Picture: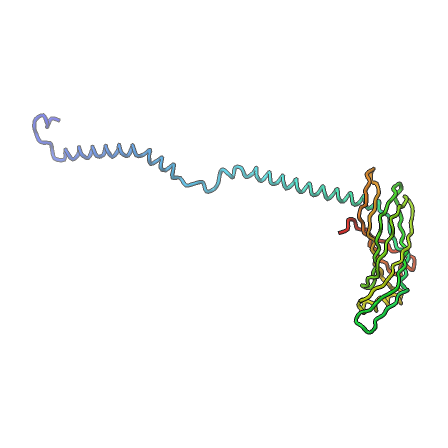
Length: 251
């Protein structure tokens, strides 16, 4: 300032220092004004949250819902199995005992005619016993269809007509199956003939039908049943009745 008033020239470097101070001031001003923009850019350009922190806060709830859902399904299935088991147990307790007291398959004729297949004719006599062991429950049977086989030979079919059985009672039914089979395997026919000769026939008997009776005041109508009997002739001939096993709801 004194140099300007006296008309003296400025000292060397004086103008340069002024220019540099002005430039630095502009630079500082530019830096100060541009700093907020840089922070804003940094905020905008932050990478997305790759770890998924927000979904993680909701995962325990999803796991809990899934666990409770699985537990509910498991409990429902378990309850259904228990109810089904109890029902079948109660149902079986009402069924009568079925036994084969006697069968006779001695009147059989075999013809081979020097062919790979044979024919079988004759009859099978049966005595089947039903014992209703229930104290107060009467049973009503629908038609029972009987089928018999031995040594892989289908012997034929017959049926018992529908009947009613009183409680604490025994009912014996006679049946005769007429046998008239052609095209029987020759080896099976020879085995059956040998079994009949030696009184070693293993007769497989099946009874298919329906039964009705009340349970707790509710009438169970025409429940389908299958009784399968494995009858060994030697045991039956010596008084050991062949007991039949039940299967409910035929497939």
